[in-house]
Image 1 (spheres, rainbow, N blue to C red):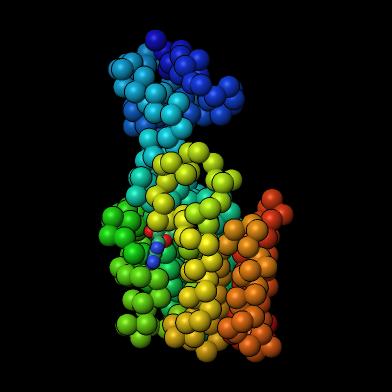
Image 2 (image 1 turned 180 degrees about the horizontal axis):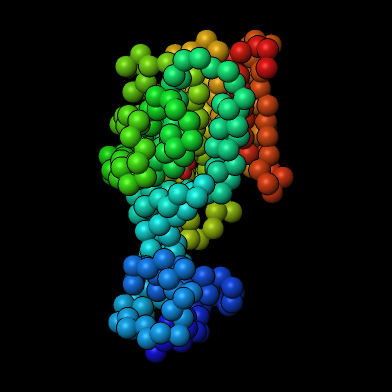
Length: 287
Ligand SMILES: C[S@@+](CC[C@H](N)C(=O)[O-])C[C@H]1O[C@@H](n2cnc3c(N)ncnc32)[C@H](O)[C@@H]1O
């Protein structure tokens, strides 16, 4: 069979009947199995494929069970960089790209004359820390509770040439408090889905790490953060937080409960789907 015929073969065997999505999956499988780029595939569509059909059938079976494509091919692009992902880490989401872009454009408008400290707390695959490291010179610290997760983040930092990141293992703010580290930019995408939330899709719920997604109410990390953030931030520090699209009100309430709002600047902002998803806080009172 030619590569094009194998693409057609895969598309026919996929359960979901979404032609453009199926083609994307088929092409990803071939590139993954042959270890070639998508451009190499496009220039060889009518050449012999030479792949073992059993291997292809195994992947099709897995995708038909809703195992995320990203875990099968071990990759996900985030802000144009290819990140290695496996079942231990959350698959980075496009919404998070939006938050990182906001943080980067904020940094670039500031005239900062020292090398700042950036904290990416709950780093997962390292997508946030590494994307900042590749675009901005800073001392970057990235933390996670899980050793297996940090192994993935470290691999990504090495593969993507982000050498200026210090990885810390530990529970949320604790490693920073313990080392008395103070951040100038703190950026966090914590687990924020309530374990009672029934709207989470099957694939995410069954195959992505529960520790990355769920807490009892979905608000525990923000609660701890607002009570303790002052222990890990410099005087004029800034904060970016990601949250769920129905959490703006409870997040505002928590912030109001623990922070004197007229001493800070804050702004909620939406993702491209026009859903409230992010909170920006600046301790500098003149922005
Ligand atoms: C929503 S994921 C975010 C991953 C990545 N930052 C991103 O934006 O795609 C949350 C991460 O928090 C980590 N995590 C869960 N509980 C934690 C804790 N108590 N302290 C630190 N990290 C934790 C999980 O292992 C997971 O990697």
